[in-house]
Image 1 (cartoon, rainbow, N blue to C red):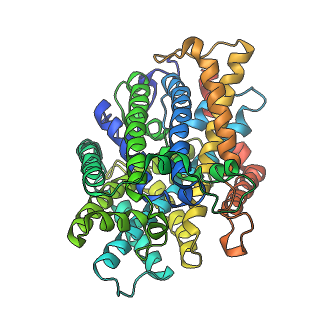
Image 2 (cartoon, rainbow, N blue to C red):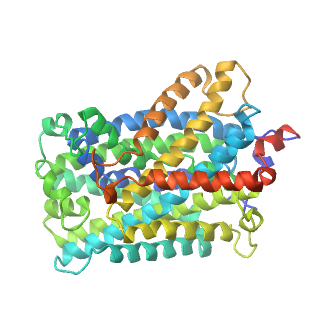
Length: 493
């Protein structure tokens, strides 16, 4: 009999384990795209926090993320399966809660991953819009429907890659990892050499409360959506673990290294961005290009060609970030369908041998992404809502899975065999991760402004509520009899 941490126990999608250490590190790094996200999604933290708030919340988030990643890396070593969080919950939750808790975590993790896809596509659409407007300021571009159509176009292209070129993904991740690092230094050179940098006092001590919150601290917590978005998705490697060689040993190391590398690059980049922005922050935030980093590049270089080249590099990196997000989402969908967690699970878990990828699961992810992306046609703050629901859904899944293993530690119960062991640091690292995750989860539902109008509300709570209704309804009307908790299978062997 195999233990759940034995990699030979896990059957995978393709029948081959094509990922290695470097390719899975590249996969996680490119998916998180931390320094790229720090440039593309910083408008909310700049609005609620200012330059100093953006810098300090980013650094603090990275430190707590390391605690979270260490906790999840240990879980991944114990049970390296594509199910990720819901599988871990089924292994460690109290027996009376194992099935319903792992079920709702499976739905929550799925929602978090799927809602991240249109967010990535929307960033790509905004970059194209910025490229056009920086070269032709009079262009008739920027209407909601135009950005929405660009978003849809990127969805189809990125999903197409995951279906028709999926076997090239490990190779692509290794190549793009090199570009990820080289482009980082290219941006640093531009900011450090060409920008009129602001003062250290401005960058590290001057905060902003654009949303009108009761205190500066609350304002910065509302702006946490930006740094969390830059670090969200550390479980990405877990969802690919059944396509990774020696997963119980390699995956935890890859998760830790990817977060250390991405966090270090991200912190340097966000500080460099803030110095380059200097005293011209308002002009960058209110730019006609619609994306602050494009305007900052133009301000710094004074060249449309230079700005275009730098933006295209960023666009390529974000394109592959979207591809990796889709890959993880489809594997999460496939794994949960394999355990009968969805309606039509038999169809969703089917893998066509012609493609060696879960095409049906990919089609479901595409359909949901198109529905969520359609929100963009009617709201200028759609991106914030979709980012928030992705953050909140994944944060909830992290809270529950880490909370379950922390409960076992508190009760003195044995954990599963593992090749990445936190030892005596396990409990304090779990506690630090949980404390941060709970705060981040609560503030992920806050709007940008203290008294928003209806169109400017953070509608993440509505999407989140809809997920609970669908998941609860299916569970009540027959899903509870069909869903098979993966932990129960192992315990009955």
